[in-house]
Structure formats: structure tokens, C-alpha cells
Length: 163
Image 1 (cartoon, rainbow, N blue to C red):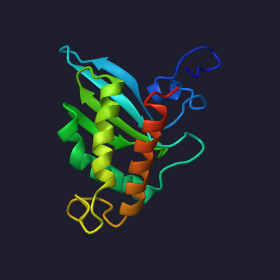
Image 2 (image 1 turned 45 degrees about the horizontal axis):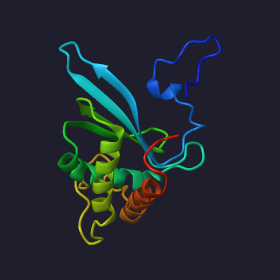
Image 3 (image 1 turned 120 degrees about the horizontal axis):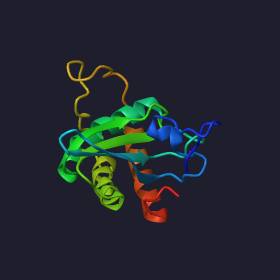
Image 4 (image 1 turned 135 degrees about the vertical axis):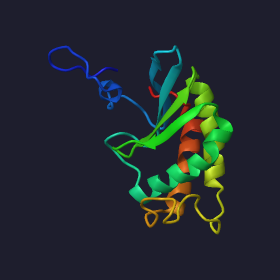
């Protein structure tokens, strides 16, 4: 599933080497694993919500998903370093310490997103005040909950693999 340059070289950015026309969202895919200078392992996962080049997450819903997932992910997944939205708005990158399996990440993301989908409408979004967020006005709880439920349903129907 590599997209190679015309001269046969791969891109330096891992995600640019993924053939986005062959994946089937939603999915969890190990995007990279790196060993640090002291032997520590860092693993990055592609947690895809939408089909690339077909649909994308609306900005306000994506922003709210990021906040709500941040509230729960560390309860489920050990060693979380970061959970960041992709610039293309089709999903997120999850970066963790250590070696972790795609299936385990997918199972734990189901748990996280089940909590997100059930977030009470009258409960404030965590970290969404002016002192806590650089764009506190742009949130959409309804859309975030809908996409959380859609991801869970998609994983239940097709499994967690990308292809």
C-alpha cells in the first residue's frame, strides 16, 4: 500500500506512503514504530474515522471529539503521549510509548468512543473555556457524538483493519 515517487523513492512522511485509495474507513492502523536513542519504543497509530477523499470531519465536531477523547483515552490506553487530529480531517493520530497491537487499540477506542457517544448534552465539554482552549467557540457536541457512534458501528460491522 505504498505510494512511491516516480523515481522509486518513498516519501519521508509515513502517511504519504499510504495508498489512501485502498483503505476502508473506519480503522486502526499502526502507522509507525520508532526506537529512541535510549531504546524506548514509540508507536503511532492512524485512527481513521472517514473514508479519505470522500468525506471529512467537520471542524467543530472534530475539535469536540478531540476534547472528549482526551478526557477518556488515558483511562483506557496506557502510555498515551498524544492524540492529535489529522490535517485532512479524516481521523486522528494516536502516539503511545511501547509496542501495542492494532486490535488492542481498536478495542480500547471502542470503549473511549462509547463514553464520548454517551456524553450528556447538558454537561460542559472539557477544556472548552477561553482559559483552556485556543478556539473555545468552535465546538459541536452533537456532531462529535454522531461520529463517535458511527466509528463504533463501522468497526463492529467491518472490523478494525484498514484493508
